[in-house]
Image 1: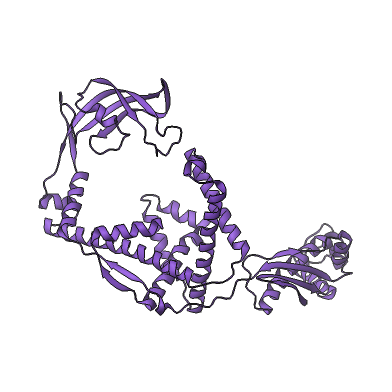
Image 2: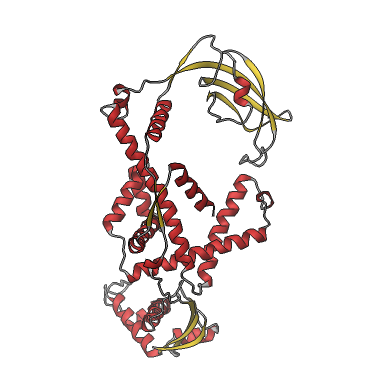
Length: 451
């Protein structure tokens, strides 16, 4: 096999590979020897078909298989011999002249093909100890614990129907309603037996206020207006009228915070319940702090690594992002103008996002390779179990999905791999700790996310 580099521009490479006709012939003969013991044709005993007859019956189709296998194997060998790492699968070009192809298939000419690809750039990793990072630490105070327990109480509220009761804040009102805009009913604007807890603000502005004070059996016309930022564009900002019939008004019954209440939540006492809640809040704070720290780390990794990006990787990443964006806009019934930007501006913005993702992906991969960071089978098994637990009663279906769906395990593996690299870098960088309040913590997380 002869390999010649015919083009070297930036990250783009083109190799010309020539496989002698003699080598193709040997591969073809080996392939005939491989199948002759299995072939059974009428008039011949199994394994006794003469080779000339095999060539006549299967020669062309076998040679096509040999040609395909040869291209695959020699192209891989060419990359390995030159220690080249392609960014994506190389594009292989066979001779366009059909007569030349026929000569190759008949063993009268060498196989000559070209392969074009982009190589991964050389990446010089930054000194992780030089990264300036800050880990936020927020303590869990009694106020936060009490608030969380109050929320548990609200989620444990039961409702008792009361005849003749006028609906007030906190009551659960069960209603039938039909909504109309400009006298016409609209999709999603009607329901039967809908439970509404007054004061929770789960319906559009004006609806809950319109049924306050109503009693079971009462009918009302309620005016309400969809918010300007309502996700369904055809309804956003529209005024609607709802014909409402109240079926039931139920008063709330809040449980008392005592040991009996604690036991309903798996604790032995109120004191233990508070410990459980405090630990849960601490995990939430730590998760939020890590989210902010990880974003800060990725930002610094991007800024501290400058190298040429393979255009094919950026194009693929951008195409995936853009397809998702267009799908989201279509489902919401919106246009780029509704988002306050032109399509061209949006494309530029998302192109930068694609470039960031590709750069970080290459840096993360380089860190992992140079430090031998790998995902173990045990880590994948734990991740799969955790994923299955998210769907109680459907665990078998989840396992089958990951077993049968190509790429599904790779999607599960990606965030685990990224977090493993992030943990490795953080250990080297040794972020400084800074104590903050709960509000400061979440404000900083929100600011980092928006940025």
